[in-house]
Length: 249
View 1 (cartoon, helix red, strand yellow):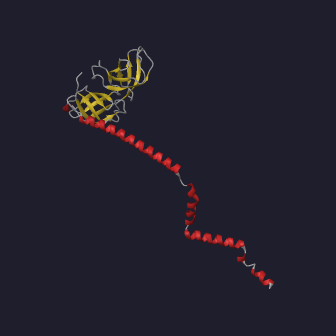
View 2: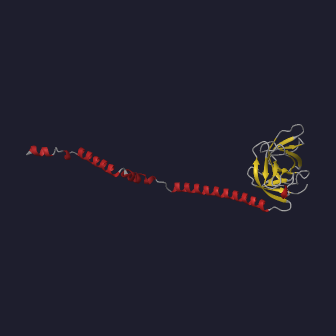
View 3: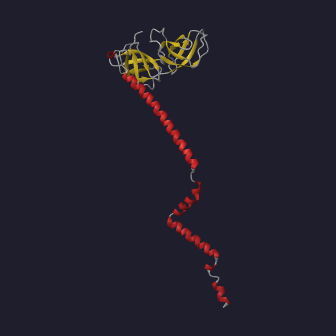
């Protein structure tokens, strides 16, 4: 009798280690059948305490607010530009001719733009051309339907200007880049960065007091002259509509 009881307790299901292996086997079979969905659900519950909370929501909200603010500023800028274009298109009168830019050479040495108005519209050689911001240049040639404008940035351009703060006249000469040179025939001229430059009342080529640009840098005096680089207010490479002034000097 004792021997029979000893044999029965030695069967495999009476061993704890075997039960553990059997449970693991069943678990693996279940995982195989469920195609890993159990892992995903398990990860769901384990990671739940670490999900983005209020702090992450606040960061996201601020990012969205900043994005909206940037979009609003871009829309406001575009709206101002469209208003300026609309004003230029609608303001043609006896003293001004509104024209569209149909071609431009703003990156080459000989800088110019071509407009869709010509001699049949009353455009004359030497007429001043302005855009949003101020003076762009002067008409150098016309055809029946178009006109060509020499920009202030062209080396061919030379116009008289006035430095408003110190009331000193000078000559603005194009240099083939985006920043024409201002020449003052006085080495003692107290010109400074930020000074405003406009067309000179003494000029025989331009109407007076047309905004032109701002002094960006000042060079060292040389041979009784002082030079400066000018940042133009009107940007010919982005302007689509202009006005041609018919005012006689």
